[in-house]
Image (cartoon, rainbow, N blue to C red; front, side, top):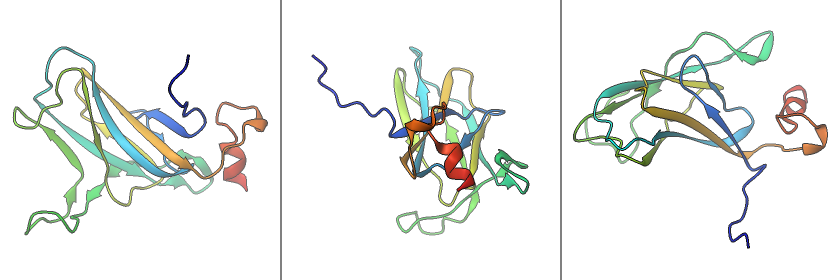
Length: 150
């Protein structure tokens, strides 16, 4: 007996390790998840989060990617300033073996990708609270293409 509610059709997931990228347009919420399926903690690495707007003549293709700027939040330490959105892994701040860590940055552009991801990690961007899902269109995007041209 299935005892879990399926989320099929309620989110999109993207492998966002550069040169691949995620398209945030179809949803209202997103999260970046680093996944470590190895038996070892990942204790070194600096991961940069980059964003891009769509090309003016093609809303489905990203333009030039550049580092996103992290913005301090109201609960940030006093004196925190804006800077490149990065995730720094260390012995004090690792991605533990067989675990996941979720991140987000404020005000991203339409497209998002991560550079400098250690080979042992997967970087998945999950987009949820989809603006429109229409499986009657019969394409792998679930009707997102029809949303773009609407």
